[in-house]
Length: 254
Length: 254
Image (tube, rainbow over all chains, first blue to last red; front, side, top):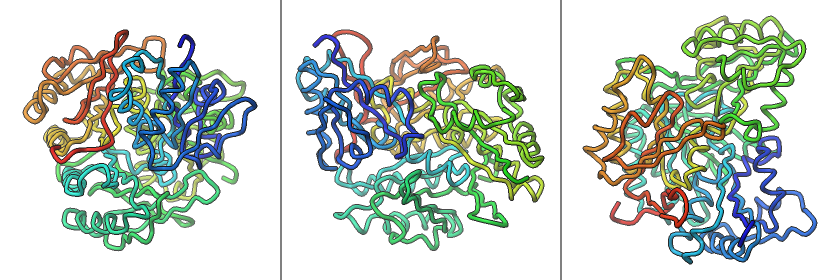
């Protein structure tokens, strides 16, 4: 398998202007692209390059396919939106390696970092992640809902700004509402909440509200939800959307 | 001030190959570059472009300078390493806006997201941030040490992987050791800990150990420290450094 390599590539939020040259070089070098269909559809076709598009829920199968191809000597790029290490394919690839063929541990695997959805969303809002922050996936097909809830509460009580990934899916309608309920026990109703969908893409949509008025109906599968901390501030502007930011410093009160 | 714009640009971890085209375009459009000296030194000189390099600790002054220049009608890029919104200049700029001249709220401010140090480090290790995670700055000139400690404990108890920024400075030698001590009360000694310095740059240095053996001497000012969760796993390899990853799923036990 000399020369073969498995890239696990973060494509960034969408547009090529937010994708690194390192990611572009990996995509160009690849003989096989493996990934969720809509992500692959954003990439230009290249002569001779094979595409293996799959469904959203088959991450481990997709990782195994990519590892098998690389073990056959092919140069493969597994593609994720945003950063490949954030609720995306990198963890699935290494989980497949650990459970899979011993020879997969000898493969040359290179994870190529990208601009994550949470940082792209934060940039459009101002600087809401300026203090300590955390990222939580609301998907409960991978962890018990009690753990999701306990992490939400612990993060809010400790003063972290929270980025919520995977707030909804066709199979899950109630979790985001339950998450807001749990957070209302800990944080004031005036805490800023932002719903950020499709950042950097033509259908980008941002709405800013607060915890009291936060509604699951403001989110869909593409939405990242940012929930402020006690210290997060709103700057009103004469024109346009307010800016959100979290100061780097925390007073004795927080 | 028509046409003037203030960009707050994330330069990524270092090399141009990890910088987005969007960031490059902002750097090219700028008439004035404002930032910490070593970051500006990584950028090519451009004819006619002015540079305002400053010390590391003068973030608010630097933000005010950039806003004043933009208010005079100049196109300005404030530069940060990594992502501009993560313990970097974006929060300082909006703090300066909130406290500053009313007209600063009418400026066209665009934050340009970048590849953050934590995701670049994670990519080099495998997928340690594959589950829920948080980022904490150990700098206590911006927040009381008791808050840092309570956030560390809360994050470790709740099962977050932890990325520690600013682990040391010339003025602070003891905090990182105290942080490890606090985490040893909560997490097993076998918990993976990685020290990642200067990722993507020629002097990149990574060392992997565990919480029992983690020593502040393994870090310097450039180091990002990643501390695993209970679920974080190590994959040994016949050749080379082990891979670290955190599975996307959490069993009932966690």
